[in-house]
Image 1 (cartoon, rainbow over the protein chains, first blue to last red):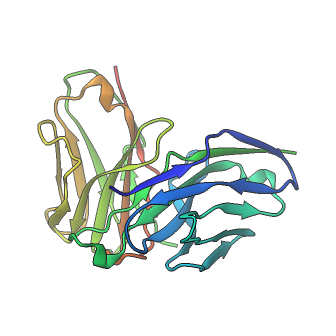
Image 2: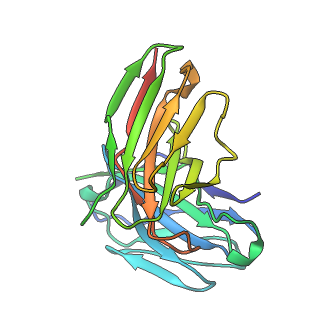
Length: 117
Length: 115
């Protein structure tokens, strides 16, 4: 079945440091890929997405590129801020043609990021 | 921006009691999801509705969990009887439709503690 593997956390960085959170997936065909963020005490919010190979999703300074050859969707940000402290979830949704009547979102376990001033 | 509403925010109950959670999706969203998030894990889909119909409940423990969305708008998730292992965050989400790249909007969740 479909699965998502994220790098283990927690990740602790200083403000303005470079961030990478690794994400790899297992799925047939070309799933859609997502990064969701969960700030303390809040629900999950969509951060960015990519729906086909070589697409780059970006938002709020975060970027991730859909790499079919390595089945990866790593999240990056050049300069993190204290306000970026949150849990980040990588997720996939199967390709429509892969069959079935449901296109449910499968999440990774999440990576806790703490940014210190 | 419109939000998905969930209540209660926190629920503490004793083992073998019944509990219920409520979700009101964003107006006009046909698809509604209930997810369970165990501490340190990613959310796991319990049940998905398209309007008032269940599309997927393959991961719902049907001996104790039930979910309904009678008028295709708000939804209730019930657990009876609750067990210690049910302690988790229960998240509701909605989307306009269930297209493969559709954005899900999540509520803030109900944190359940079973003692």
